Amino acid sequence: MADQDQNPVFAIQRMYLKDLSLEIPNAPQIFLETQQPAVEISLEVNSESVAEGIFEVAVTVTISTKVGEKVAFLVEVKQAGIFELRNIPEEQMEMVINVVCPNIIYPYLRSNAADVIQRSGFPPIHLAEINFESLYQQRRQEAAEAGEGDGSPSGIIVPGARH
Image (cartoon, rainbow, N blue to C red; front, top):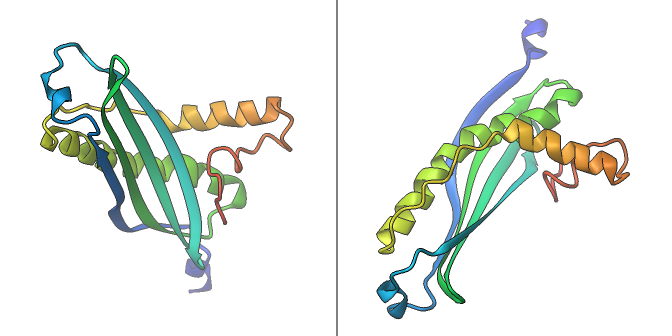
């Protein structure tokens, strides 16, 4: 029985839409524009410990579109999950929080973003798949090259993370 208490635990407790913001500052005139809007997308991953062995991981995507100098729409979607993470070796914990958890959360975020954009009267924007492991490794490398400690991306990938 004592051995079972030391087994690694990874369990999804809940997935939820934490925040959703939509702005169409130039409506209704923007709907009369005929040229394709320029699209800019940014992504952020954050995490925090909410109880012993329980972590919230959130992925935030901001989508900004412009037609010329006019903003067509601005959408921010923050999708989060609560995960039970126990007895996971410390050297693997960063990878689980920055790669495994976002990979689970991201499909929900993609769906919510496409849905809200389409419901706002614009054609949906289907976000591309993201390789969170590649992104994590790239940010680790950037942190190491910048001379930030041991190359651990804790302050870059998950700013404000509290493990």
